[in-house]
Image 1 (cartoon, rainbow, N blue to C red):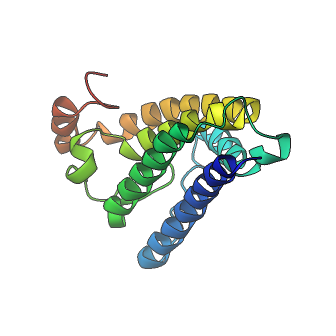
Image 2 (cartoon, helix red, strand yellow):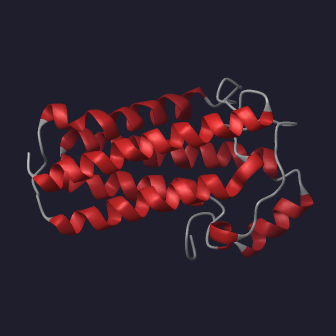
Length: 180
């Protein structure tokens, strides 16, 4: 593997580490677990995210992908940074999964002005940016990340749509980025 491949791996593994650290910090501040993926209808996305996160860390075991162009580090780093920034921006509202009665305060500033789901947008950009550098294992991880995020967003929106303030936010903010 080249230096570019190792840098890509470091960004992906660093993202997973940062995600877990921010989640642990938010959980300690809340004084309880923020893991809500054990609720009905969320096991599919939960397993998809687990496998996608494993791909972010384990892909070097299969060897590098078909490119070693440093240009691919840009979407990888932007995705990881945007996802971590968005997660941290949620503060006490951060959760993994969703359930009625388990919502934090509505977050609609910062990166949430661009997207209702900026953490997922960053994760998806990170995963797809790694595909040329990491090859087939990351292609599978990117597909899992994308499908899991899409399924989880639908689940979250069913719960969030009960809140009139969220419905107003949803009317003015795209689900992903731009018109989509």
